[in-house]
Image 1 (cartoon, rainbow, N blue to C red):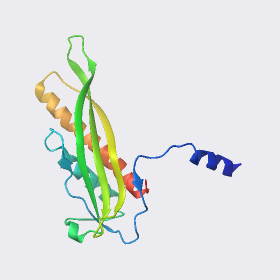
Image 2 (image 1 turned 30 degrees about the vertical axis):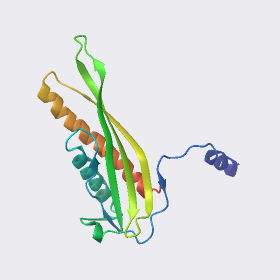
Image 3 (image 1 turned 90 degrees about the horizontal axis):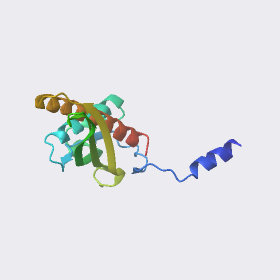
Image 4 (image 1 turned 180 degrees about the vertical axis):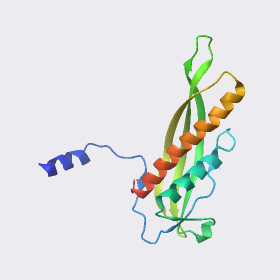
Length: 165
């Protein structure tokens, strides 16, 4: 009975977007260069890269190194899009709540062969935040929202890599 349940669960057609082979045993040092920013939002690549490094450091499975030449693998990313969409509008016609969306392409390659160990062509992350009536309040809250989305993005990327998905 248990075998039948397991077989039916694996045959349902569900699969994760990332593709991977298990990390080779010799991969212990990881370089994470600053992600490439293909958006018009300044500094988003720096915030996302920082959160990815923090998450990998917290997990402690791989040692982060500064230079690619010192690494066994390199984690690279491209931020493909960043959008802000109003989701709640006041009676006066002003947006009160926004949703930020970030999509990215992320790869993990083994050094020196450049063999792809893991890749996801379309990460999508969303986060919502409220805005105040002042323009400065919007900017401040947008930065907080980007940090929140970057934290979730980093957690998902690192979890996917370490769990082999």
